[in-house]
Image (cartoon, rainbow, N blue to C red; front, side):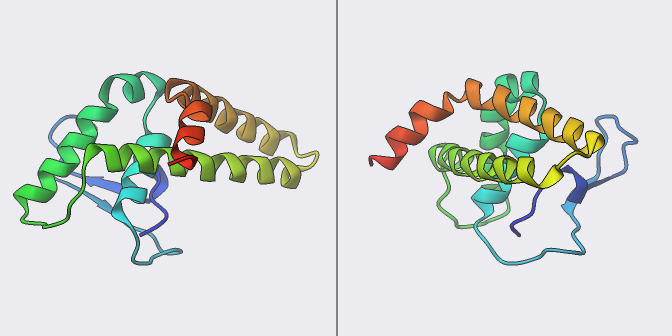
Length: 140
């Protein structure tokens, strides 16, 4: 898909509790075939709070892999592949944030939104030890 984020995810049933019947992606702007690992990494990085990212990201990776297998999807996807996808997406988001800083200009509202995004990015980058691990990844 290539554009997985909270604004493109829908839930049916449940009304915010644990009885969700269906989860899906709906995007009127961007749709394409792509690497599903990128979408999973995007959702993990963008949609989880700091505490959920710390406590649940590995469980969610495993749940995704198990759901694929239960549905007979014969794709070879491992947790390590999703972790690698997280590093790649984090690098992508970092470059996007740098670009956005130049675009917002003097608009205080957009500056505040961007700073909130920067804080969220930075928290997760620290948890992942992003700088060290991207360097290791690049040397492989």
